[in-house]
Image: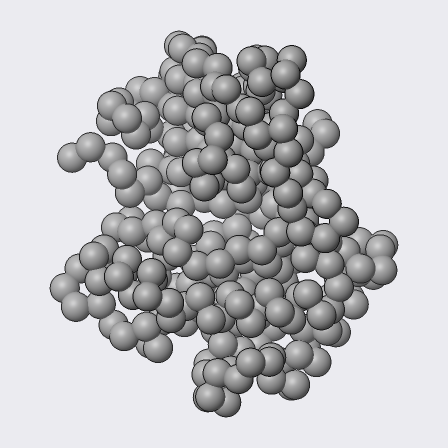
Length: 290
């Protein structure tokens, strides 16, 4: 019921969902935050218990032990973690399910971790998910109780810069161009569209910058002692490019490599913390012009 991200079993989508399986596979080549998964079997057991308002004690015990081991690995008593739903039917070639299932950032301590896991499980059967799946699944989608959902728990990265990048320009469908959006701070404000990000178009062949548009970036999401908050970006930073040439080059190179490795146009999420570039997600682009 619990698998570490660096184990071979973590590449099995039926166990850990598409998001976690793909990150496990890529973690040998790219800097992926370490972590572990509560598998689809844990979710099935919770459902078999009648979907109680608490994590079943046998699963809670496993979760507590893993969190304590993770704390020892990271050298801190209560490591902040990102708790992310990872369903078997998300991040597919036909539907990304972006934003449909729950994610919780900067979760600290056993109590908060259990609550975040429970809320991820509950998000599998919301009206929002049912409507999305009925619209984006070919033929008749299987009932939601048949869709396995795992929960990925990873080290929380204190991002200075967050990025969503596409290996094909999703606006024009041009396969010779890559498209990059970037904001200050954590990626929540980028993913939910609450700020206007910087936009960069990069040549796929030689990674040369074709165009950049500097967004307003008036707000950014930052970590607080537990959880996150939106704050005002200092005025001088609002009109300053988020990415310099070196960082843009790193992102473009990683995006191009991921497309070549996977064999399909890639939509990635990544973040800089200090000088380190972390890969947070990689999935097929589902919005290309036909």
